[in-house]
Length: 112
Image (cartoon, rainbow, N blue to C red; front, side):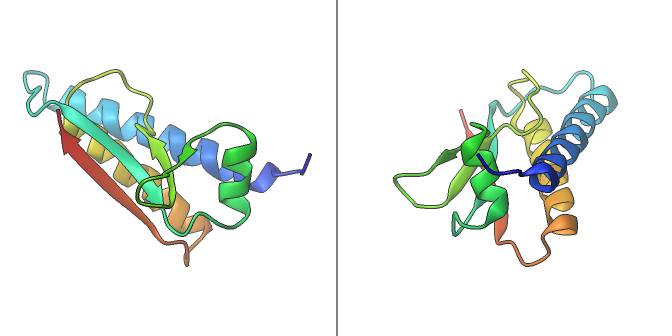
């Protein structure tokens, strides 16, 4: 087993930022819930120590259809509001880019 302390630290920092951003967005817009949907982060190509740490710790999955590595709903919030989940996913990416500036990571969404 590898020591991925730095990578897991980055993941947890990003997840905390995503959770805060999503909840702040919900709090600022208490009567909004539409559109319902999903948001996730995609890392492509699915290589490097961060992805290896996520795989080893079951913090996402390989996208067998399009390729890459996917972290669904990085905020962990149970809202169905796609826009709030997207805000969280963008905050997650912002933290990742701080730690891994050359990582190819994007936010993706889908209306339910």
